[in-house]
Amino acid sequence: MRSPALVARPEVSFEAMDRVLSALGWFLQSESQTPPLIPGEPESAVYVKRATDSALHYTFNPVLRLRVLEFSGPEAVREWAAVRTAVPVLEAPSIAALLASSETREVLLGLLATETLRERSSLERVAALRFHPESRVSRTAERVLAALVPDGTTEAFARLEAEKEAHPDRSVLFAHLPGEEQRRQVLRWLIHDQAASNPDIDAVLRSALVDADAEVRVTAVMAAARLQAREVLPALRSARMPTSKREGADPRDRLFYSNLRDLVAQVLSGGPLPPEGSPKRERMAPLLRALSGPAEVRDDPTLLLHALTTPVDPGSRPVGLPEALVERDGTYRLRRSGLEARWVPPVEHWLGTGPTLRRVKSPGFFVARVPVSRAAAAWALAASQGPVGAAGPDAEEPLPCTLVEAEELCSALSRIEGVALRLPSSAEWEMAARGPDGRLFPWGNSMRDDGATRASPWGVEKLVTSLPQWAREGLLCGGREQPVCASRREGAQSVGAVRWVVSSP
Image (cartoon, rainbow, N blue to C red; front, side):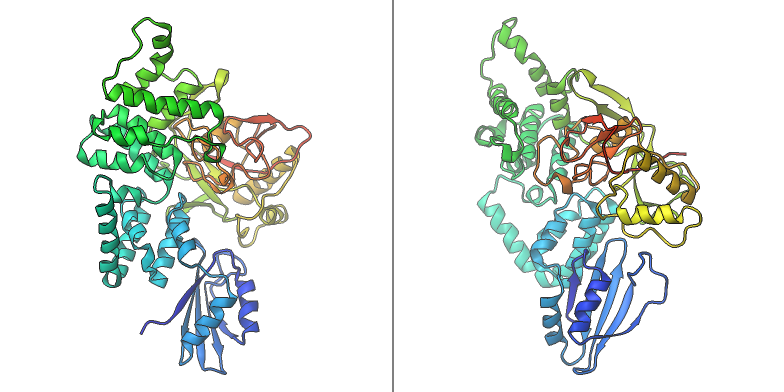
């Protein structure tokens, strides 16, 4: 019989969990002697409860923040139930949210939690993740699925069969792809790679046209036009376009999306268009060009059409790493402080909006995954003459500071790491936030209430939290008040957060 197990929520610190376990009568017998990657967070520990002759084995994966508690002894099940009510743990709904995340680390955490807990309700999600574009995720999903299949095959396939019977003209697989960003990208790669639709693509488009995400539905409308998918006309005509601010559409966008759907339906059905040379036909010309193939980006509307039809170019891996950076399991970290970085490859980016719209090629650089936290800043300023250990977790609330203080913090980190860390230029900040497809926000082209939790196409996080962030020119980018990637303002008397950059060698 397998030992009963729990997976504590990643934000529960070892110190907090130790207090709870001590209050429940558990005694810390031993912990790992290897210096932990995160101070105060041992990677293994053993607790005992002499009253019931029970043991609790705790392990911690510091990269994914996976905290596993396994119980043994004659009263293991009862002790498991008692701890489960006292320690915040991951359960089916929260695991499903992790598996649907656009963040690789969260997806991997969800997969390992699924494997540990043998959470069979997640089976379809795990099966879909085998096709994830990142190899770490797809390989892990294959392994987890193999562990789950013996106990859940019949139940899982019964549910999939029921879905397919209810909607035989749709793609069950597409509907279960994790995260709306991945579903958008699947559609955009279809536009990019395919010359025309076929029955399998039609099934994907029908699923996409009823997707919960408004941008997936709009992208499917563009895909239907580009691939001449006439067989999906009934689904296209009934597709619900975003009609409210809750779905991220301002009044101008609502009219545009509705007109777009109607025009695509008219074109695919062979309906009449305004005559050549008429004023209405001239106004429609840019949109008609975009429906038939890539069109020139000249203004914000044509950039939106470009973003809806262009897959994210992942670019190339860095040829070499600066001396200050190390790579572990596909994650880049500063060698001494341990702070995490993301790679922005040397690909072309659309920057600006309206009269400032332009295309710029990234030089290739590394940027902080999140702004520098209060704890990391205090460590850096104290340790810049001779650092010991690591800076600790970098996912806390960012440090608010003036431009001068931001530059001093970059100088302190530079002394520690032995390489120049600096504030990004406003163009670099926008590249890191916007990705290469010209999207309006880091997460896409529609406003979202949960934007603070969303990452950019390059995996850069916390771009629109409460504090804006300093750029080298003394400008403030991002923040809750200016979530549009191209927004920035003068910050002479303001405070902002620090997001550092390291140039590629």
